[in-house]
Length: 156
Image (cartoon, rainbow, N blue to C red; front, side):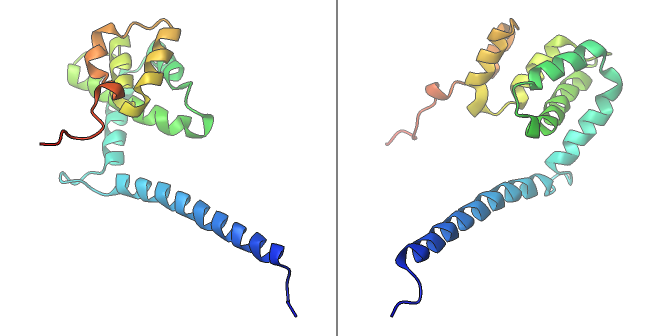
């Protein structure tokens, strides 16, 4: 005599697989965050450098550049927007400080936005810039199309 029906065992197995999948996905993202906190050869982590550039460039930001940063970060889902704004602001701040100008300009914002955006998202970045009427033509050399990259190295 069976102690439980077959469908119940399949139900438990299904939820066991779902649980393992969710834990694996969460662990992957936690591990990525852990890698960002590890110090590099210079003794600072990626997050340390982001904080450094944001704090160093804080006095260079004006209302127009802050508004442009908010506009550029607007397509990012709200759950991740603050993190995205921080990493974009760090790259913009780095460019502004290294250029030696006394303020963050629109050019710094556009160039920093392009450099801070992962290459896999460049197609969306281009469509976003075009839909908002932002001229990115001086920085097209920074955009690498995923279509132009070979899928595998050539076989010799």
